[in-house]
Image 1 (cartoon, rainbow, N blue to C red):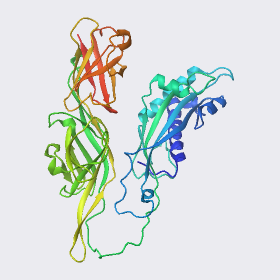
Image 2 (image 1 turned 60 degrees about the vertical axis):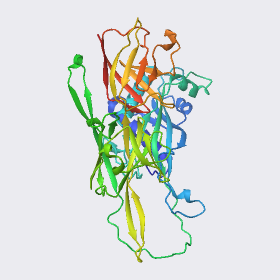
Image 3 (image 1 turned 90 degrees about the vertical axis):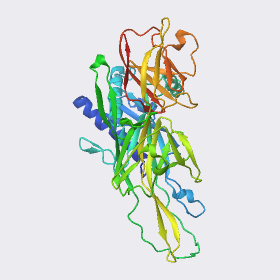
Length: 458
């Protein structure tokens, strides 16, 4: 989350990122590269070599803003709450040989360098610099990053986006999403509320702070690739959802300050499928193995959690794979001068947390050719829930999610279906049984990638 002075500061930072890093990648051949922020048709009129990144849409991120301060007064107390936004950009490459002919090769090269830049810099901070050149000027992000996402737009959707242009075909483009940005709120206003009693008390420390997160992913390689298990660090943290407790890749840790010993703490989880924040009390969730020190918080993610909602009611919640945020709330008791105790709570900043599905096995379906691919995931994830969005990568090919197979091999080739709560079935891209070999495999559910796995075809 960020607190930009205006949206132009963020657009300029994105343009700076592309300009500085593409020049670094391309070397002296592109020393004069221009990165503009015009509408794409205006960038075409320049008739030069450039990248263009255009802000075409903005929406409110209802899951990205802080809660309305309790007890706030005035006619419009919502004005004192930061407004959380997501920004949507379209990236295009432009190069011309003459006023008549486009230089397609240069456009493709520019787009390749730009996409690598966005891949390598998935998060940018207020102090991010490339070759000593800073992206931001006078913008304070409070130590929190801006996340850059290359949106998985289907080709048909891209054509629809460009269909308003009657003069030419769809442009080579990429669609970007930047989140979460906070527009600065108005200063809080107060009214003449009568003072019934004076509360004097001392509370230890200020608000807790989470400064970062980390976890470990375990990847088992197939025998064809040498076998063995690789242990890789992940930051921000990725917790793998598994039905059985005790897995090392389900353990995540957060560093920070003022976290306490856990006796007054509640975890605040927001994100995928949660309409209101879920308050997680350590004592009610022993399987989460929540452990505190003043500078570190550690817990094991589980598929279900006993959580308290805003009304104070508790219930079991099933957590789906997806993108979340975690914050730490410390509940304290203040004392009025007459001895009356009253509760108070302070909440930390938020840190991202990804809950990922785990792949158990992949094999060819028994039966006559062509044989489909059957993928089993751990029971900690449910794939056939309404609204679940999934993507599948198999052998370097992207497969399209469908609700059901049509029975036509020509139509079903390259598609996959959730045929059960923990099962996916895919029709090979070519419509033929996959030949012998080892195929890399990755399943993405609600934006969360599973740890890599492989399909071995004998």
